Image (cartoon, rainbow, N blue to C red):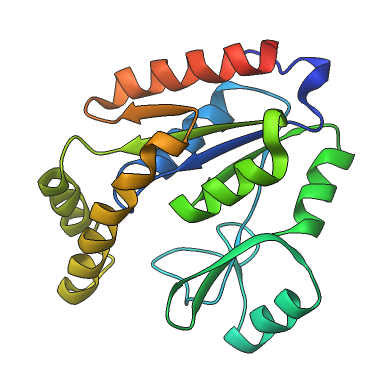
Length: 195
């Protein structure tokens, strides 16, 4: 298992993708492969899906509490992804991870990824993960079995828009073959941490 260099503190790895692209699978692989990294748990105003747990997968907040934290400047970035459905990165979460001497790894929506890259600048590496096509993305969302048909179509429509943001990221990784995507992501991360 490769170890992060002493330079890990203060570094950020940002993974963004349209829903269903395999982003979370790749992020978990990176966390299992490298030591000295810690996952930044995002906050959201949506309800948990499936087996998701508060404080592990997300900090699940009410819309009211989320808005209070926005007003209190409690986020590095936040986005109202759908009306009343917020996602964001808590400043307290980043401080906790860096105080432990770890690099922080993000699994965020596309606009959040762009905002995080602007915030952290050269101390961040941003990776955009995409499915080989919109049709493959739709099939993955259906197989996942966590969303209604209406929600799937919303996600697919949003994915088409999100793909236009890919060039704003440091790297674009097409997740056509999972093992190849794992290997490519490892190589990109190792190069960044070695700088």
